[in-house]
Length: 142
Image 1: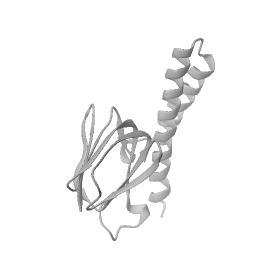
Image 2: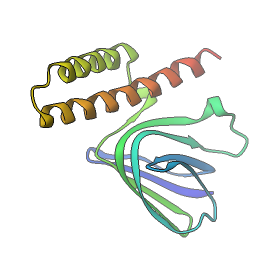
Image 3: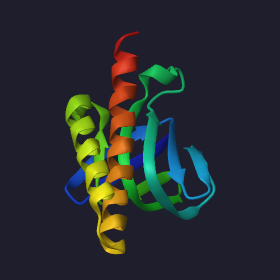
């Protein structure tokens, strides 16, 4: 087991021993398990998937939408520090879709590079949140 701690600006989102954590990085996803080599890396906007036990199926994983951050692995401890992290159970697919639509509208109406960049960040963030909400819905149907 590896101890996984996910901390956002609003507090600790996850703090438990787990079997495996899959993280989004700039150069692709990385899986972290017991005895992983020491690592410091940058997380990109994406989905964190947590498998609590080796016997858990994919549809039993817990999902978090993150908006980038820092990853550190050492001595069977995995720490991820992010600005925002949303657990799939906290997300309403309809509300996230509305937020994504609004972000896309902001992007289309952006008048300068700063506004465009900000709107694109919101689009990316809400697209990941929608993906996580969809994962929860699809797995709950099984």
